[in-house]
Length: 457
Image (cartoon, rainbow, N blue to C red; front, side, top):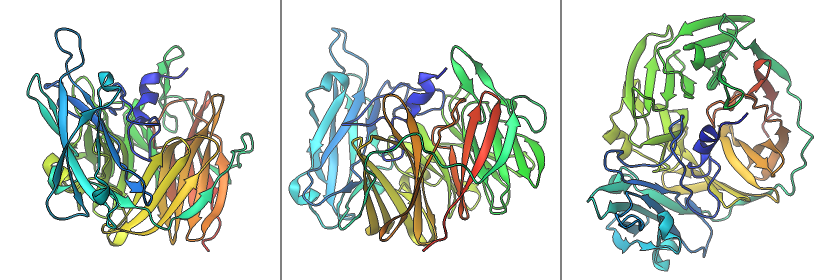
């Protein structure tokens, strides 16, 4: 029933997405557009997961995956590269050549950051230039290079949150089911694509307004459906029908982040007015994407392999790829110049920090005896942070919702996945006001549930 190609797309985003355990994992390009960076014409692709948040005394090894055309004799591609590193976030860079790892036949390369740089009290920043020595092609990661490098920051005195061993089978019941739609194409229904053999895809994403209006991206039927006060209104959208992410701006503008397709070989962000008429479309700075959110300036996208959050528009005006790349940041942008950085470490640890500029102002270190998967969201609510992540075993999985405060865990509950049909991989939860909303599906149709959170402390 599941489609591995769609599931594989979560194998990139540092912290948010699953699939990176013990190093860099290369995944094939899938219908939702996540995969590797580089120009398809050049045949050079690359991937990197930044060590965004480090502990005192922790060595820093920068790992890259380089994929290019194999040599005529069948040996691995002639890859090479160099990393440019500096202490802090200003000043000249030091060049460090990449070396082949023991598994370089699979395209893996690494660079050890000198201890003097890795132990800097302000962290370090860096970018890499990767090469296919046979063809002469090269790619810079992140795309902004020296103007918007990757950043690694010391975690410092993080608040500890220990989840222990997860107890499966005791999920919380939703407070309200705010939306229920059967499969179909009539108003108030939701489109379903696929087959029993390959699996099904339903609505790709959704959003919730401050007034509780739920807007469903019904991309199979090429429309958005607004559900409010017992009524549903459908708005036609000129979208491709692939698994896309979705956000509704305060003025009703709808942003749809689409995957590549046969007609458009690159991912696009499309902007529509509230009545569905197109405003503009813009390609991304990177080759792939993982998640779309609304930042203070407008839509912001977690792009790969930079693993950065560049703004895609500024006050309604689309930004070209070069401007996006030059404004990339390590975390999701918040109000007042702050941002949230999420860093998954192995399969059992999650590090989260709130930044002001390039300084950590508060942080959490979450550990678990049960493996942790993708992080669906890490959104502020007043002075707290709401985090939804997946935990799993070989047999089953559940989501864990956490409300984090300065003293640690203020609330925790489990949520049943309910993922009969596929959606965009990191679009199953939304936070609106004091409630958490979940997009789910069954053989009968799609639904949106609401979980009311405790009052902020």
